[in-house]
Image (cartoon, rainbow over all chains, first blue to last red; front, side, top):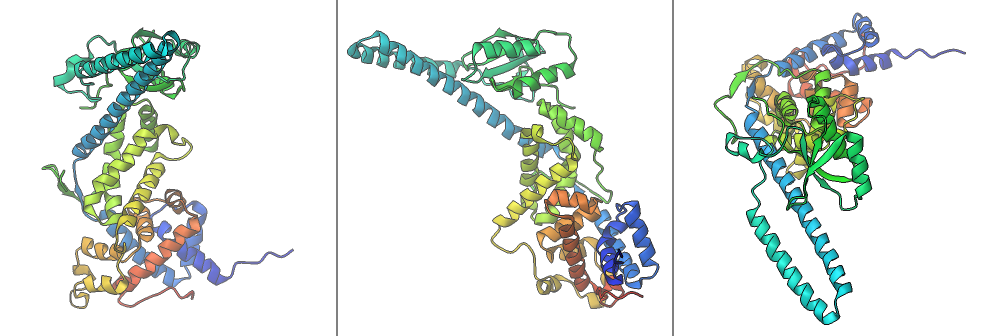
Length: 236
Length: 208
């Protein structure tokens, strides 16, 4: 069986196509050798290498304006922070709605239609009034990146605490199993927004263990939201 | 740009980013909502993404939006990153798609015809290519190229990437990368024949 040698023009075409990567020094050893062997005999390719080297040098060393990344980064974090707060509010509203629906079902079973209507109306009015009052009284959630001004809003939390919102479909056994698997415990909650405080039991654990603890909470289907209670320190 | 600060300065040096191993560590920490790690990664990639987005879109007012959209995806989707690949490839792949989206939102074409590009050149016959500022002729050259060819040139020559990595970023085959580069080279040669020694020296397949 004979193997067909590549024609000179196809070899030339192949080398021509990869000259830019010969110039930028990223070709593997085999291709580099192939190019070097070819350009010994090919003037157009040698000229083209000169052209590409000029282009390469120009693009590598074209002056650039260095602009501080900090203002852009802060705008991005503000956007992320806004979205996280909206998610917390949405989760709390969903829980409130679920509570109202369950309460309404209980009243429907206990009361006659007439009394039920009055009781339901009064209950809903009371619940709505209460939730409005609570929302007014609820302090603004601290920014996920701290300033000196809001340092005091983390009072009451330990360094290994995480604020957690459990999914509506999560059952108590599932939550208990999750906490056991990650060596965590609920130390507080739910608050007015439906958030629990979950703490890593080993309070002397290194930060890497805490980060794993947080990651496992976020990835579990029983958890819809998990954020450090005390934000992780920013770089200076 | 609105966020240009007193820290702006001219530099001819290439921006240096962290190596691939530390990029991977930062992504792992970002999965755990580590904002310090995210800020480190953001700063490490900011200059490179700035330059790449500007080269691609030629639109300074959209650059910050593109960078922040890219890094927003990194923050939200860090846990989807495939650790078998390179972080830089992943991030630049997102950036390339964001740039294409910005370009597609424009009503006008994303590049000039060769004739229009030539009109933008100063009298080269008199002053010669050498007297042009590098940024001037690069700007004209890039304006004459479509976005995919600009991307290949920039990724190969400024970012020093192999064609297989460029293919991963642009989500195309290696042959497509080579073809785009081939066409870009031809167009630049047509615009600047001086680069070839004062005469067009198109590839004609002949050996010496």
